[in-house]
Length: 180
Length: 132
Figure 1 (tube, chains in turn red, brown):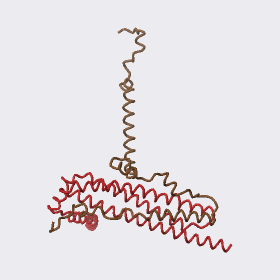
Figure 2 (tube, rainbow over the protein chains, first blue to last red):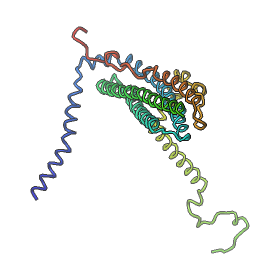
Figure 3 (cartoon, helix red, strand yellow):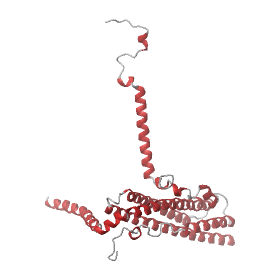
């Protein structure tokens, strides 16, 4: 009986420990000095203006880039893969590259959504009254924007991967045509 | 107790009609409003959770940039209309390569979301240095 109690207590400690550590880390990551808080309050209006402009320009960038990224998959990759398959050629590598690209786009979609929501949250905070919260919200939005850029870089890499798969297919197709 | 009914009584509602039967029109209007509020709530929740809100440049705050969004007609023109069906020959491969290289180059030309505009130093919300 005592043994089972120990197991239960051990499990509870194991489950609670990560939260306790996260709480300590979080508490340690927010020591803003009075001077910094005063600086945030002083520059609150200009910081918010900059964030508002960034919010709008990033939205435009997201819409235009997103449209281009989706079109590359739906209007080019998928159509070419389909054409290859309907002509009874092996499109495995091309399909795989397209799948990776689509997965990256899904990640980009989600990470931009998370970033935009965080930036909107930061914009809703009154930085003259809650400077520490504003600072943390901006810091979180900064991390999330970095993730969006990482996803963009991965999408560009996937575009190159498809290009490489296409080049291989094209070379095989040409050599087969020459041999035939 | 008189059991005599006049002609006028035929148009009157009987006393034993329920409360809801008496207020059918009001109940209909209230129900319609409740249902429409529910549907609006659901659609707004979907609008927010699906990510559509992030792509909606008609929202307040985006009006200044909405005119700069690439129109779908322009995208149609840029991407051409590569057919998903048809014979696969050297001409169709060359056509695809031309279209793909052009659009891939265009997509990669913009290093979107690079830079660090949310740097506290840039926003002037960083900790003041000893020189400040």
